[in-house]
Image (cartoon, rainbow, N blue to C red):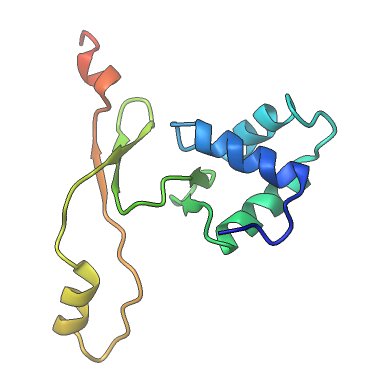
Length: 131
């Protein structure tokens, strides 16, 4: 898969998100990219993220009332959102084809995608002493 226009900014954004394992938001990505491309603007970061999502290089993770975060792990997986610190953890869990099950149960609708998010504690918060 080749980027339509492989600019220095696009390469930098994609590499920053790929290296990050914290599902970063645009503000964090902006701070990291500025270390490589000091004059990049926040607007350029947002446009670049939109382009990388549209081209299939990143997946947005959205939650109402929160900043969109980005995932470069394109393999099928689920997420756990830590209820203590907000970290998003990748989970490799096999699930049945939820889209097909929903479509079969409700043939009058067109199901295009399914999202499942687990809630709980990340390894760090689970290991932390509770007081």
